[in-house]
Length: 251
Image 1 (cartoon, rainbow, N blue to C red):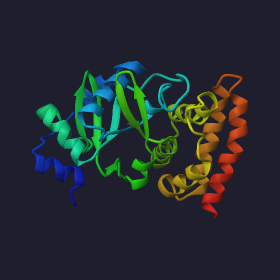
Image 2: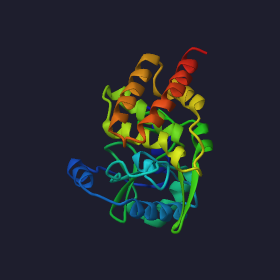
Image 3: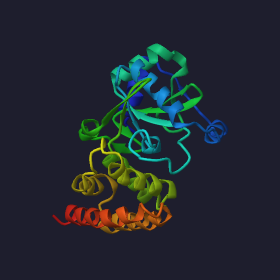
Image 4: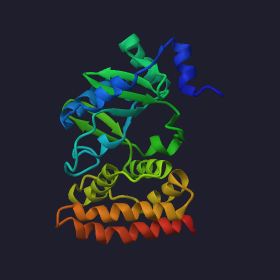
């Protein structure tokens, strides 16, 4: 099997390979962090890497990034993509604390008690397209800056995971709803591009329109758990999104 780009870079930089192990992963899973703590850690890593990180995953749906209010327990880890320059800067700073896991193949760092994973070129078997970086959003905070995955890509990857695992996750539905609603409550956030989202579903989540529509139906039904005043917004927004999906699969 051909080595991944990340594995080749780790080999050339002499970054060690280690196993995290089930026990350690379970311990990380029990941890709890608030948004401000995670944001501060991420802005510090962004500075160390000189802006060569894009954070992704459920953390990005928090109220201070792509979401508009706290809807669930904050993520207990951080997932990022980087590049060769970013990886090199991280290794210069952290040395042996940074290593490639034999568990998942990503590069791992425990920073301020937070488990942080870094991928290059692909993540969980998904080839990262150029548009991923181009669409990323830059946010500024008192502690510094961070770059976040775009809302369209985040929803796309949540759909991809659910479809590949043949299991729809409630936390993904909550995060997706939070992201979809955010522009209606936070005018500084651009509206979700439903046409782009429809095309991203087709290109990166599944080639089956039926599976995508099933996933969106799951999210829509989950909206009944929202606050009463938020439900009409979802009901008004979803027909537009569904039409965009159908158009993307039947241009």
